[in-house]
Amino acid sequence: MAPIIYREMVPGEEQVVCDMVTQVFNEFVASDYGQDGIEEFFRFANPEAMKERMQSNGFVTVAVENDTIVGMLEFFSPNIVALLFVTVRHRGIAKKLLAQSIDKARTSNPSLSKLIAHSSPYAQPIYQKMGFSNTGNATTENGITYIPMELSLERKNA
Figure 1 (cartoon, rainbow, N blue to C red):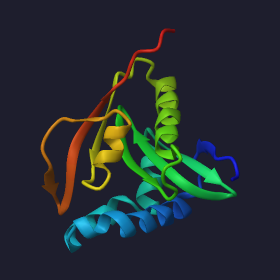
Figure 2: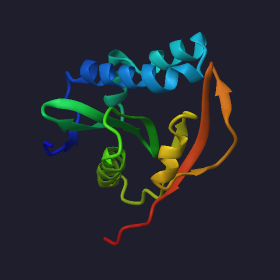
Figure 3: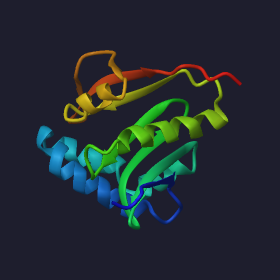
């Protein structure tokens, strides 16, 4: 098993990252949504939209194994986990992507105290395993069903 390298996505990788997101979304998440929800998801999760978000206080952390992107987490200020997708299960990749992203977010916001995510029903147990708690009931907007979740962060001593 090759080591997994965690790093920031570099400009030009948006298509490859979004292709991986599409693969995982179609396999595990799309069945929970109608056509309107799927279309809404891809209005957000596409290379052009991702590139635009990266130019305004966002970043994507990727997990790379054997030169293949096997996971990604998109974060944007001040404290939002926007996308989290992993192709390889049960190896702690999502948890490591989250830890790496928290470290990076804290470089520009040292007082970061919580993260917010809108989890799909499929991903809710994954977020819970990483320490997120539900902050509300499942909601559907523009065809996307999500559960609002939050992760309280311990403050690091400077």
